[in-house]
Length: 368
Image (cartoon, rainbow, N blue to C red; front, side, top):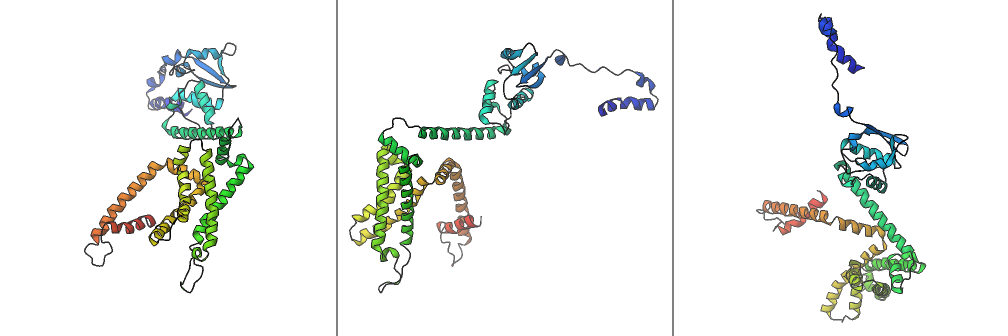
């Protein structure tokens, strides 16, 4: 209504100032769109929901179903419309692609169902707009990972003619497949916790002796801690040998990170059994006992959360590497500045650029 009034407003003003001949002239005829006059309005019935569009709109993409002559297989002579027994909600974005030339991914749609609709209408998903492409790829990857997990679970549920080694390996990788595997899983986890606690408690002071002021518990109760360490190492050794026996590829198993951690965790114990009382050798053995701390990494095999964290760090290795590289550059730059700023002072602690690294690292990681 407002548009019509605005169109007549110049003639009303002309009549008001006396230009009556202008007002008496007929309105010019609106220009005709010859393209639309020869076009055809078609009806697309998608599971009972009707969509209307011009035929030329669909003919823009002749390589698709709606733009080619193949859509005639879905034409109904009685209703004079094209009927498709498909999802009408997904069809809205598909028809919008024909209208605007831009394909968008509705976030509420199932990614598998959406791909099926695109495949049916002959539209490749690679033409999805930049605004939705990242969301589409993320949903696609999540769905693929979920399907892979489901396939792995289904494989675990099936019990074909498996060998004894395959049954053992399946029990180690998925302890919930049997009661015995679950018991061994929890027993191993219990001894891992005991081993880590023992490694910590044996360094706690347990009182004084006439010769020493404070004696660590590991030296005061040597036999008790040795027995606990022996029990833990025996469990770890049995677990490692059983996994080595049941592994599908023993070479790949021995090269894996978890296998190396298992060997490093039990390695110091067996060296200590054959170690002599030589002071030089004993000092080296004390240093070697530090490797027992790697037993704490055995928890990653018993914790799904830690394994997920490991996979996350692995997938973000390039980003973490760039972060460390940037941090290293900043440390070198600021350490150099600190060194030359304090170079003339006699009481400075920054005697060299490497000596300034620690102050720079602590400042950047705690205050930065």
